[in-house]
Structure formats: structure tokens, C-alpha cells
Image (cartoon, rainbow, N blue to C red; front, side):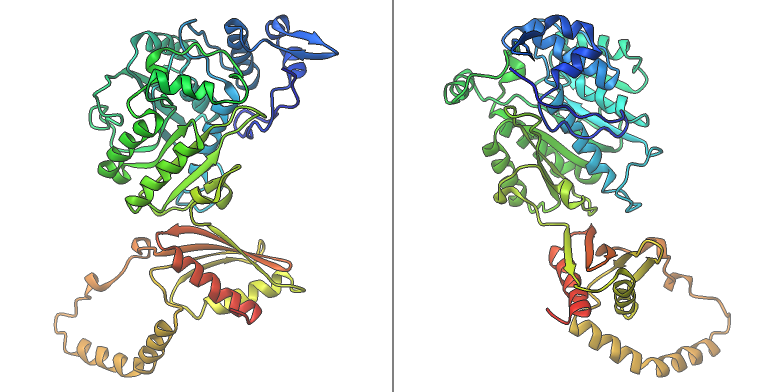
Length: 455
């Protein structure tokens, strides 16, 4: 198979693989990979049906792109690196864009703890996570002792013993055993589950494909098959998440078929889970996988993260961004107009003139007509209320302040948080936090009317 391109970036902020691996570039960096390549018509290619060749490709990519060294048994899955890295990278972006700082950027100081269910012999996900983010730690489990022995060896080889902890599990054990692991909370859970429900199901998947499998499969039965296939496995995680709730910020899972993604998204909706994200993890022209994530918290991922990659409309979550076109108007004017509009509301508003960016936090809808009428009524009655309070204070003999009536700003419950970015001829709105999509769109409507005079 010929190659086209690969992604080059630093280890901490490496971007997604978006094409097939550049065999020429990899061969130039790694002699062991160069030795297994074949050349035809001035193009390098490798035999993806040779298990040894596929293993070497994985080892070379991990070594050259991430500084990771692994050993793999011949009778267990050899993980393709690009799709695995794309999964990790997506999880990174999920966490980066749902933090309480609202920064939407990687925070090198943030400590993160994740769990990989089914680490496999390679232990590739924990190794990639920790190699790319120095403050991340991982727990991992597997029901296969043979795979776990190799995984532990790979952790030790890479000096990750203090940051990656592995445990042998059983088929009947909870998939997310927080209490047994003595872990109060996790930042994320991830899994690359068996895709098939039976041997017949697996064979049918190969038979129905127009092209043969792109690479030889050396996976053991427990890596390929489980009751209900990938949907059944992820449903188990969903059932456990309904009990664990916010003890995990993001529950995530890879899926082998678009139809599986559609079924899982339908199950999320059945349980009223609206804060979810989906991605297509395709890294080359053949291999295509999908992933889903859901959260019981109210921090919303950036729109390009929540709806990442090539996807069908039916699986998409509500958008977390809107753009208001403001023709012929500059950022300064738009910022002043937005500021004047928001300052009339009972909300928290932070504005940065240098960057023309503001963040609005509201406890509820205070911009509806009924809310504005209520505010006007309260305002007109304000003078009398002040007099009543003063009279009550005169009658308070002990003079103690009623501290229970005070509200700490840090404890304000946020019903909606939105970042407003003013640019020349456009204002971008980013839904940061909240559980009510209608509330977000109604605030967007308020600003649109203020900026354009149109609903």
C-alpha cells in the first residue's frame, strides 16, 4: 500500500493524524522500519498481511512520534497507532474545552486521572496519554492475564510505573470499579471494546466488505467478541454511569461501526443525556472508527470537539456555537453594543477590551420579556424597599448582620455561561456551560436583535 502524508507536531500538542502514514519519512527516521519496506515504482509500501511487518509499523510510529517503546505478543492485537492517537487527542480536547477556567486551552498544570477499560498487551492508550501530557495519570484493567503481563512490561520499559497502575479484572466485575480502586473521581473513562457479538458476526463483517481487511488481525477471542458486541459493552458502561453520575467527568468509548454509534446515541437520548460528543477517528483512506462521550456535568465542549470529523446529522449533539454576522461593523463597535446590552441584565459579565472577548454567566433567563417586566417592577418599588429595610434595621436591638442572607459570588449557580468574541463583521458565541440549549439560543437571539435589529 502506498503512503501519502503524516502529521508532525510536538509531543505535548501533537495534532490528529489526518492521512496515511508517510512511509518515506518514517523510513528515514527508523532503520528497522526501512528494513521491512518494499519499493515499487519509486514508492515505498509494506505488506499489511504480515503480522511481523504490522508490529514493526506500530513500534516504529510509537518510537518516532511519541518516544514510546513496546513489545507485543504474536497472539494478541497489534494496535494501529493513528486511530488510537486520534482517540487520545480527542479526549484531550474534551477535557481542555470543559474546564472551569473557560480557557479552551491545554493547561499544563492540570492533573488528570483517566481509566482505560481493556488495556490490551500494548497498553497503548495509557502510554500515549502519559507520554503526551506530563501531569496525566492512568489506571487500566484487563480480564486477560497474558495481555496484562505484557502491558505491565511495557509500562515498566517506559518508566511509567508511578503514573500508570494496572489491575486484573474479571468478565463479571464492574467496568468502572471506583470504590474497589479507592478512587473518588475520574476525569475520564475510555475503552476500545470488542466490536463483535459472536464469531458469526465477525465473519459476516468481513464478508460484507467490498475490500478485504486492510491489515491482518491477530486478536484473541476476548479482544474481538463480547456479548452484544461494542454496543453491548458500551451499554454496560452507560448503565454504570447512571449510578456513578458526576464521579466521572467524561465517559467515552470507541465504536467499530457507524450503526453502533447511532444506537449508543439513541440510548443516551432515552436517558435524557444531552451533554454528549461524537467523533469520527478516521486517520487514513481506509480505517474508520467512531467514538462517543457523555457527561452528567454542565460544561460544554467546543463545537468542533463535540461534533468532530465526518458524521451523519442524526448523531450530532446540539451545537455549542453560533455566529452573528454584523456586516460593515468593526470589533470595537460590536463590543460596545454587546457590553451595553449585557450590562442591563442581572448577570455576571467580564469583558476584555484588548481581545474583544467577554464571558457572561447567568443563573436563569433574565432577558425574556417577563424577566424584564419583573425587573422594572422591582426597580420602581426599590425606593420603598430601601425605606422598609432601614426601618427594620433601626428596630434590631442587637445590631447583628444577617449573614445567612449574603451570597458568595463563588457559589452562584450557573444556568448559562457564554463566551462572546467580537470580530470585524461577526460576533461569535460559544456555549460554555449549562443544561438548557433553548436558554443558549435565546441569549444568542437577544444579542442578534441588539446587533442587527433582526430576530
